[in-house]
Amino acid sequence: MKTMEICPVCKTEFIPLYTFAFKDYSVFTCPSCRVRFSKPFIDNSEVYKSEYIRKREVYLGGTNLDYKSIPSLEPYMNLVNKKILDIGCGMGCFLEKLKNDNDVLGLEVSHNFESFLIEKGVPYKIGDIENNLLSLPDSYYDLITFWDVFEHLYDPLKILTMVKDKLSPDGIIINWTNNYDDSISLFAEMSYRLSFGNLRFLMEQSFNRMSGHNYNFVFETLDFIYRQTEFKILDTIITDTPAERLTESITMRFLLNLFYVFNKIFKKGKIICHILIR
Ligand SMILES: [Zn+2]
Image (cartoon, rainbow, N blue to C red; front, side, top):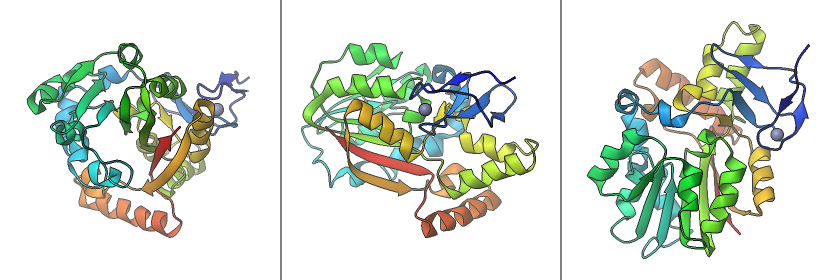
């Protein structure tokens, strides 16, 4: 008999009709808010070892590139003399560009990013996100960003509630996260299901728990979280991460780009980004 699960986001109790089972964890889909979550969760302070950071530097250094970060924020905020908080700041690439003209702070859970943050001269606090948020002044920050971070948290609803206290009255939040309502995730899920769980590789890659993902979202889940925290969506960006940043393999890049074509046709994307206001 299947045991009941509780959705860690919307708290709905449900009997899982379909589970993706992997070696060390399972992935459940909440029938109510549609979030996908792994059980057990993975501790992100353990994921980003130096070896992992070296291997994924092209990806982690991504905020150096134009496709996310500063140019994309110009329509929403003039980034001069602002107070900016980047949650899950990683190597500090986003804040490095802004630190001279603004008052910036990065929060990070992994000690292995510390040397990069020191080298870039980015002010930071390392440790538990909730504890570090509690130590910050209320109604202070003009811009609070989550770049590829929401899916790594244990309790995104709680963190967004806490973050709201730290946001200035006219402040904005950027939530750039994953979206499993896209052609890659659909293909991965089909390959798992049609093979009765024998073809797990694509689904495992797609959920990406090895990179610290505890969640995969769709719009419904994020909308639920924003309604609970009383945020409004000012704008939505749906996009994909350039294939050359994800893999060195020419074949994999070709396949990813093929999926991206389908995503474009159907107006889907593996990335969903929301600009939020009160
Ligand atoms: Zn739920």
